[in-house]
Image 1 (cartoon, protein in one colour):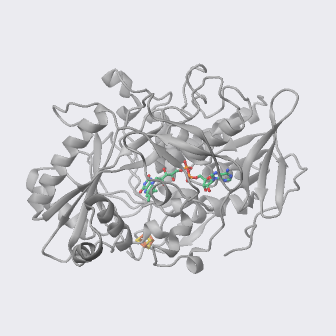
Image 2 (cartoon, rainbow, N blue to C red):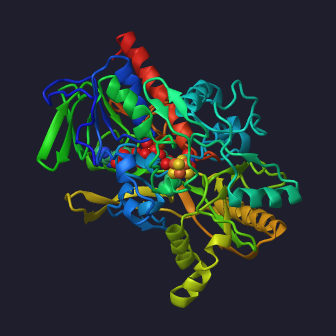
Image 3 (cartoon, helix red, strand yellow):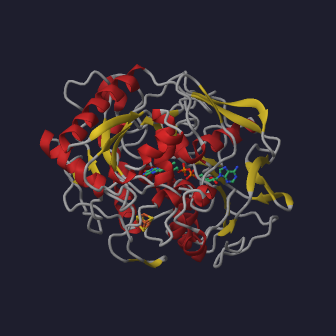
Amino acid sequence: MRDKTAVGGRKYATEDIVDAVVVGTGAGGAPIIARLASAGLRVVALEAGQHWNPAVDFATDERAQCKLFWTDERLSAGADPLAFGNNNSGIGVGGSTLHYTAFVPRAQPDDFLLNTEFGVGRDWPLTHAELEPYYEELEVFLGVSGPSSYPWGPPRHTGYPLAPLPLNGPAQLMTRGCDALGIRTSPAANAALSASYFTPGVGWRAACTNRGFCQAGCSTGAKASMDVTFIPVALAAGAELRTESFVTGFEFDRSRRLCGVVYQTARGEARQRCSNVFLCAGAIETPRLLLLNSIANSSGQIGRNFMAHTGLQVWGRFNEDVRPYKGIPGALISEDMHRPVGASFVGGYLLQSIGVMPVTYASQVVRGRGLWGDALTTHMRSYNHTAGINILGECLPSDVNFLELSDETDARGLRKPRVHFTNGENERALTTHAERIMRDIWEAAGAHDVWTYPRSAHIMGTCRMGTDASDAVVDPFGRAFDINNLWVSDNSTFPSALSANPALTIMAIALRTADHFLARAARREA
Ligand SMILES: Cc1cc2nc3c(=O)[nH]c(=O)nc-3n(C[C@H](O)[C@H](O)[C@H](O)COP(=O)(O)OP(=O)(O)OC[C@H]3O[C@@H](n4cnc5c(N)ncnc54)[C@H](O)[C@@H]3O)c2cc1C
Ligand code: SF4
């Protein structure tokens, strides 16, 4: 484990009025810390978790690596209660990118215009065209490996900086099944390096060794988690990183502007004075903190519109060796179902091949097939012959899906969050469509013992952005309508789910928020 305050960062006194305190160092926080510090601002980042050294602290051991997951209890309610813990969010410098699979497709332009296209759901208060320069910047900065020509979406101005990673066993089998059915596929965009790569401010990062344990943390630094990309830039530019610092409250001046952030450390409570706060704690802890402090909620929207991608998985067993633990797990994509012809639902989904680590797969077999003891052991003997496909599908915002504070308290004495989630008619229709397609693909590829694991993935919504202060928490740039110097940057601001994995879009929005903030500061706007 590294020293508490990472090498390279500055140290500020808690009485110093720093320009910005950033709460959380994940996909929404780290780009902001780096951008603001690089512009010369005094930035303190507060992170609940530790700062790991991947080469020393990350083992090829799923159990040991549970330390990367946020495991404080979250209560689950609704007809389709969500699994938390390792299914959802991370803790530590880098946040959930420490364990993400680094599958980074861009969202498509119509993803942002769901209501215009279908008359339901929400349009975003920003466009794909506004995010495109940030997508381009991020793909170069992170070192994304991807195909030279991508079959879906608008023509790209720039290619991916690196060639795609090799297709692993599940990806090759999915290609075979899709080819037989006339479904187009492409090597996926992955934020993992297919060759060693130099980034100014970061240095050289080594190429992916195809170890396949991305969800247990990448020990080589090939995967572009925030701790090996934006955080080194931020520290070199003078940001201070305070780890094991759990934010619990905020302080206000007489004009109701935020002037400090209160946090707990092993040594007790501390407070950092500041001129601005960027809340980037993720779609559960961000609304939880705001609700605990009863702030920024004149719209009554905090906690509402909780969304999770429909993430159904279909598994099959093959006669040939697959070895699903090897290679980048999400190596192949198809966006042919982005807007399926004749579909009875709104939006669409992407298809993704999936590799899987053994303990993760065994736990899914227990939950999905109810196997245990000898039956589980027998099933797991065929683990090396197993391959999966999953979808990432639209999830409409709904009044029945929300986060609230429960009456139970955690070890800190703070009320635990309770999340209500029930799939609506649209999610169910989309899932039925996708299950048929995935089963057809596996059948065409020669699978037997095909089975389905119902699941939702990624947490979004709860502090949505919009143009109307009466039905959104933050404006299109992430600034809270109620508090001038409070900004939110994480997956909580998503107005709709997008039929694409969220991390690249979260980072793009974070950079856009930072640039907007800096432009305002340059014009001396309050
Ligand atoms: C297993 C798995 C695989 C995934 N794979 C992909 C993928 O391939 N592609 C993709 O696009 N997305 C993927 N995701 C989703 C993606 O990782 C997340 O959507 C994204 O990283 C969320 O970013 P965020 O900034 O909103 O939150 P986070 O990254 O979760 O960051 C929040 C940070 O805030 C800190 N924090 C929270 N509360 C406090 C507090 N009170 N005080 C101080 N710090 C606090 C946390 O410790 C954390 O570091 C995956 C998710 C999982 C679970
Ligand atoms: S497969 Fe590549 S990116 Fe994933 S953990 Fe292994 S080396 Fe890192």
